[in-house]
Image 1 (cartoon, rainbow, N blue to C red):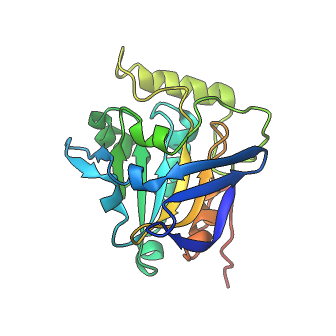
Image 2: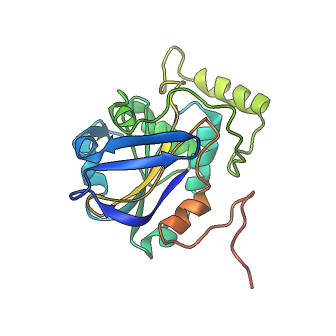
Length: 224
């Protein structure tokens, strides 16, 4: 995981270097990625840079929508109270790599009510150097995965049967998380090393300056 301790204005630093523990530095051009497009649930094109132009925004790039780990992570994102974000003027966005027509169904499945978009050609994923090979030697403890491997795969298979012969994203694609904006400012960045390597949501909230939330496996709120 790589964290920017100081926000950087990308108008003066167009290429941000992100360092990840066992990997050498990689160079990302946000000037290029800002002008790429995502789709909303009705198929409208949205410029990526406009999503975080006016507000600090947590942007979670998800794996394919049939991944049970991705689904359970988004289910926990859905549990963040609106006021937790609103009080700090922070926005939450999830971007998937499925066709946009699956957004509405995935939001219904997860109970997620914040903004969600899709990048079906994975142009932004590629520009951000998101991984397409899982590093299973990297051991992570994900506090948002509730299913074990067997039950999770069975659940994913059942969900896939509802839309036979239709992909809901590239199964090889790994995700990523950024905290961006307002404007060309990067506060935090993390590229997932494998399918379970998402950032703990409370860690994200802290990075964004928000209060933490109680989750089943990550209870950090002190009740008095």
